[in-house]
View 1 (tube, rainbow, N blue to C red):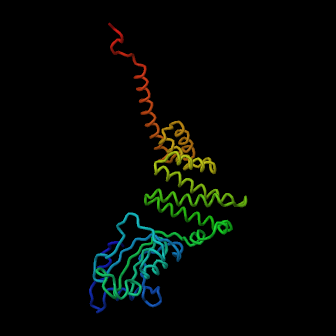
View 2 (cartoon, rainbow, N blue to C red):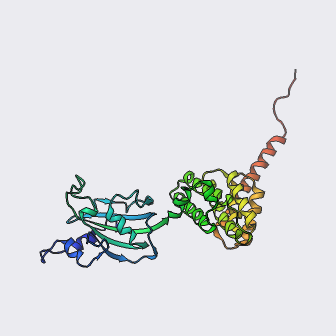
View 3 (cartoon, rainbow, N blue to C red):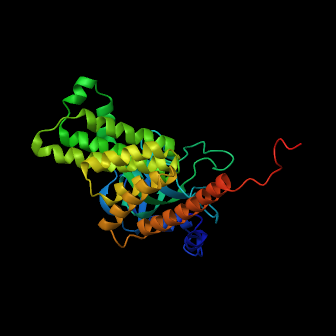
Length: 326
């Protein structure tokens, strides 16, 4: 996929049958629109559930015109594709229908006839009128935001009456959106999503037998927030969220590690050591924890050497000229 000109050349082949490459390809493709307007050929199977109608999808794609090697549109070479919401961000009806037939990890080839692509007018100067186009699409992931969208449209009173399992799903969706933004290095946007999830979980009371579900969800969000604030170079706030995570699980190695990292940035070396040693006790062979302890030792050695040098300068005999000499 994505600039896969080899695939297009295979489609073009020779034209001995008198049919165009897309006509030949269409004979072995699955009709998913019911009128042969959207045809599909699975290149690699996916796994899990189908994309839901209100989902936000993370895809890589390339669009081709017949008899052309290079794609007229592609996001394949982007390091991190943009998250797109069905019904809002995707302009091709054929692509929307195609995505609804896909599962995570699936790679498929589609043919879209003009009514499902660029219509009778096309899209000058790239797309001629009445053009069938080929798209190769890889579904990297999708987030089902239907429950979340429904929840945030409710009043505060209605939100409080939402079933707990659905509230947890909304919080998980917010956290997943935050994770996506974090991977794009959009840390300020990520923390907004994480804080929405945390506020939602703080507001929600649960019966004693289900409180552990809320606490487990809080723990994940607190760890995300601690890491995000480290990325934002705000170690004091990162430490605060890490310590809140330790209230839920005092032996959580990741929370101890984040607290140690925050203290190291704050040059509170003894506290950093305490947190990191506790983290190492939980996960003795964790390379990140062990490397952070080595970094701490190096920083502390430099710090003590500078302290010694400063003390030496403060208390060294003064060899200047004698004051008041006639």
